[in-house]
Image (tube, rainbow, N blue to C red; front, side, top):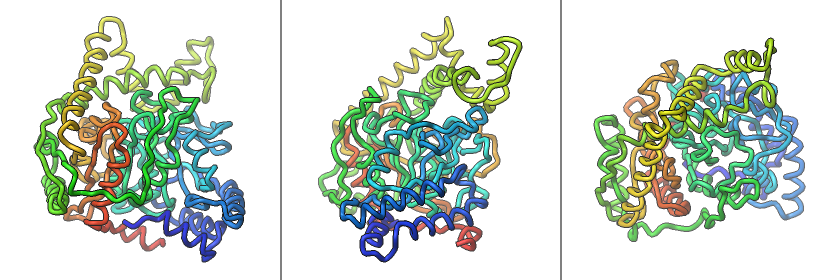
Length: 483
């Protein structure tokens, strides 16, 4: 897919379209398509037009940069001043933040225009966006299929072009997996390179804001805008720039292919598509090397133990006293029980209970400590591989998009993250790009993982592949008829 940001920026600077006209077009598209797709849970038209006026003045004054006037969307767990932020949970319905997240502020300072907030799994807990209290978004390639999760709404918005680009959050694969299902590019940066200030926490040691875009070039532009050290996030770090125009010398790269990622859990169609992509990269001059990643089978279990343990702590604040909605009771304890019972969804309750259990007396060393040890082993395994390879290629998900309306808490839904959680546990940069289609026309995603702070390399390799392969994803007829 070609980059949208450069195209729109050129139209704005050549005065072929004004910022207001561009926003008009996107808002009209949202009004027509969102009833079908359910990608947005809140729109911010009034604020969008105000920001468009400011962006136009910046362009007219000659000091607006490439993001000035570009329409963006943000996942509903990323705080936006004056625009509702609810994590698609009943417990936060009506919540309007008094400030914007660091990543949103960085985009708005450069003149980007916020269109609205996108649908997601409740508190980012899920792999299909079906735990949202607003209902699930629909995959624009096939409306009967899942959009993925938890950043499903952001992926749908970009795929259907009702947002030029979007912000998502990735805990175990929540940017990459929906990007793969919807046929767009999703990038999880190195942990800490993008501030988590203003991102409502699920699992703090894993959560990371990242872009979902129509191309790796667009993702690089957004990443470059939102990265950087933030005094409000002590885990944030300075990072190298990811210039969107740097070409990769593919002939100097050694690309690792971990055999464990191509076991029976991965469908034949996905294996075939990834294999063809690897052959293309090899023909271009890269050295392909088979490597081993022996900890894959334990990664998913470690991820759920760690993420649920952190979630049980992070979501303790939603007690009816300080945050969110409240149901009165005879005393404080009854009020908390009633509030959390009524307003948390089943999947959130399940993960809180699991997290509380693995941290409880007698079980912490048995489960949580062992999961942390597995995490250290995964980090060591990646270090060993990156001592020999520049990048790793794997499937993004073991299958293409599964049917919508299944059981979002089933073992199959949990296993949809099996290919993405290792990079999350190690805090490494990883990008998903479309690499083929199933016989039914569903997109297949390829994941590129690089070493810590090698974000630019991951994006450059993704851009090289996108241009060489030129995979075209077609939207379904119902969506096209509305355009």
